[in-house]
Every structure is written in C-alpha cells, then in structure tokens.
Image (cartoon, rainbow, N blue to C red):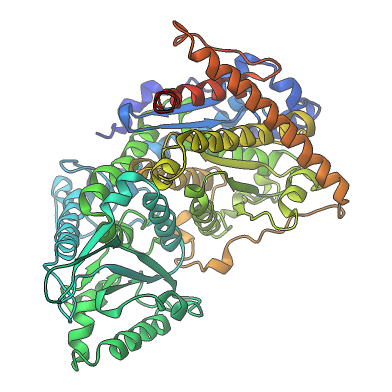
Length: 633
C-alpha cells in the first residue's frame, strides 16, 4: 500500500531552509573548490564513502537491484548539497503527492502510480466537474476505472490465447504486430526481448497451434511481437515477410488519434486484405477479426463504440511518456505472455518501485539518487553533456533506447521556467546516449573525449538466462562466459575510474524477469520525473510524440582524433584488469567451497571495496550452480 504524504514527514532528513538559487550556488562553489582537484583513485580508497554510495533494492524472493555510485566524482558532502537542492526544488513534496494529484485532468505524470496500483487500492482524485457541490462528493477512486480496463484486457488476451477469439480463417492468433511510435514502442521492445530470454517468460509465450487438417498435429513455437514505427514505415514490409496474415493480430496505438499512423495502418490493412481476400470478401470482417485500436481520443472511442477499441484512462491521455503501464503495452504483452504474468509480475514490479520511491528515505531513494547524479554531472562538472549507456547483457539492449526516448521527451527543455535560467546558468539537462562499438567509437567516447562522459553499465548477475538457452553447452562453459562478462564490466569501470578519472555508474540486477522489467520501467519514469523537477521543467508541456530519429545522436565532442595505438592501449589495460579480476574470482570461488567458509567474505588483493563487494555477491549467487555443475561433471 502506498504511504500517505503525512507519514513521510517524519522520514525527512533535517535540512536547512535554502532557496534553489542558494543551493545551486553552493554546488557550483563546491564543485570548483573541492571536487575539481580530487581524483577517483583517492575517492575510491574511502571505504565509508564507497559503502554509502552502493544502493540495494531487495524485494524478498523477487530479485535484487544494485546501483553503485562509488565511481562518480562526488563525496558524501556533495550528496548533502544535492539533497539541499532537492528540498529547495520541492522534490520531497513532489514525491509525496505522486498518487494524490489535485485534479484528474493534470497531465504531469504524477498520477502514474494509479495505473499500476494493485487491486483493492484506493487513490482518490478530485473530479473537475462542478456538478457536485460538496468536496467529499467530488472525490472518486481512480483505480476503479483502471482495474475495470484490466479485466477487459484479461478477457481479450485469454480469449486469444485459448482460441476463443480466432481469425477470419478459424486459425488461432499467434503473432501480434504493433503500430506506434515514441516511448511506448521502445518499452515494448525492451520488455518483449527480455522476457523471451527469461525461462518463465519463454514458457508463457510458447504456442501450439492445432492445424485444420486430418488429425490433430501441433506446431510448437513462440508467439511473436513485431513493432512497426508509425513515423518510419520503410521497414514495415520487411517485418511482415515471415508472418502469416491468418494468424496475425494488428494493434494500432494512436494516443491522440491524430498521429502519423495513417500510412502504416493503411499498409497493414492492404496486407491483410490481400492475404485474406480469398477466405473473406468482407473487409469489415477481416478488420474486426485482425485489428485492435488503443487510443486516448475519447471522441474517436465514442464514435466507434466497438469492442476492438480500447480507451486510455483519463490520467494517461496526452501523456505518452507514462503510457507504458496502460493498454498500449499491457494488451500486446498479455496476448504474448498471458495476463497472469503481466499483472502479478510486471505490474507488481512497477508497483514495488513506486512503493520504494514513496517510502524510502531520500538518502536511499534510488530514482532520486540517479536524478541527482545526472544533475551533478550535467550542471556542475566540466563534462560532456549526456551519458553513455552500455548493456553488458543481451537482455538489457532495449533498456538504453527506452531511457533515451523517455528523457528526450521529458527533459528536452520544453516547458522550462524562464525564472530558473539564471539559477541554471543557461545549462540544460542531458539524455542518455546508446552506442554500439563500431570501429572503436565506444572507446573513443569513453577514453579520448575532451570532457569525460559518464558511463552507465547494465548487467544481469545470474547466468540462468544463458542456461536454459544453451542446453547443448556445458554448464561450466556458461558460467565461465558469465564470469568473463562480470569481470569485464568491473574491469572497465575500475580502469575508467582509477587510471582515467572518468565516472561511471553500475546497474546490476539478479535476473531480468517480468518483475524486474516492471521495476526498471518504473525506475526510469521516476528518475526522469525527478530530473525534470530538479531542472524546473514543466513535464505537462512535453511533446506527445517522439520518433526514433529524435533520440539524441551518438556524437561525442572529441578534441581530436586519437591514434589507434592510444585506443589499443586503453583496451589492453582494460583487458589486463579484467583478467586479474577473473583470477581473484577463481580464488574466491575456491575459498567458498571450503568447509565452513559460507559466511566468510574474501577480500581480493589490490581491488577496491566496491569491486570486491560485487565479486563476493556474484560468487555467492552462483555458488549453487557451480556446486551442481561439479556434481554432474
């Protein structure tokens, strides 16, 4: 259950009353006089600082989320100053009021918690209608309409999965094509790709279609999700090449009903008619069986009044960045993976992160800390604007794109209060950059840019994702491969910090299942909202559509083109450090296998506290798998 704003007052840290301009000036002076001369090599030797800058969100048996800020160029005093600014910018009040917006027609994203509140929740909103006279009559539980829509999506998804709703040919629906743009498409791609590589998600997406032939034969496969941008329709035909129209459902996402979805929808309608005209000559019958519409346009919904049209809740309309837990994503995902997994795990993870934001002390509030670190790097350190997002796991590939799209909409500068211009010193917030290492571009950005670019590294700690995929590969080989990934990440982070004085943040999860996907989606949303609050950006003024081409480009402000020898030098030092960590990991695993060594913590030689702690955590998580592998071998 969400905590009320009044219960959070006792959890606040005693902060002196400081205006935003004063807090900003103090941070500018602090960065110039105290931080500029410090090196990360010195900062990482402070064990109290390192242990204080590693945040862990543990949800019983639902997984672990670890974020390590210890390689950022900041001290605990810096964190105090940043929290002063957060209080001056009313971030704590903003968090407290998240589920209790003044009116239901506000579009600032602060009602987003109601979109994934569990059944039985009671979040009251005020009705904008003047028909009611008394204040208590004007308040209503906004969760009721949300849960009513959940029931409808559950009914539709189960009907498709059980074969109750079929295509015009009588075949079961297997594939789903989503036409849309912006943040929602990136969120769908991330969650779909991650769940397909999770054992539970892959099993939920399994499909066995009964063919309409003599005798019942089954065709085991997975339900597939294809995403087509309504802005760029060039790849539409390519996405449809291996799909069978008789088993395909098309879902069009039209937030306002006025987006550029017309061309893509016409292409898909033409494809459906062309493929199915031999079976059904009535185009209306084809469209009713094979097309759904999700929209926030109430007029469009009222005019159609069709079972195939879904209307977004009023608190999510005209607010695309926060439609990731509405029917825009829940409907296609539930058809692929089943409603039970989506509600209990995915929405449960999002709600768990909402609860963490509402109830955590500001010093341990993960989205707030991430937003403060982003602000610190962008506004107060002489660094390149932006950060690089580097996934070390295949399951994380889509998350960086989602974060970049979300932040480019909310923090693009639209709606900035001009009164804060002098306070911000004409600086603007940045967005995450996602980069693929082609021709050494990644190393050039990280090691050779004129100004240090913060790096955000993402990794899953559990190797179980690879385990179920590769049944023909020995478990020892799978563990060895994952050991190399973990050591490569830690080696690169230490090389950047200790030898190059360049900051990085590590975001590590146990396993990227549906619950963790929900947590990460909510984490990005809260982080971006708080970042906008810190920069005094009015999130109600953001555009309602962002194409993929509007995501910040991956162009680093290089001072000069570095020589290949320098690039190779950086890479070789990183590899050398990673190899050393693998040796220490091997010693740690051997020590853990000794009798009575379960509770002992091994301290690798020449390794900073953060890296040693993470190595111990990883070795402990994989100890059972290693023991089972040894028994079988």
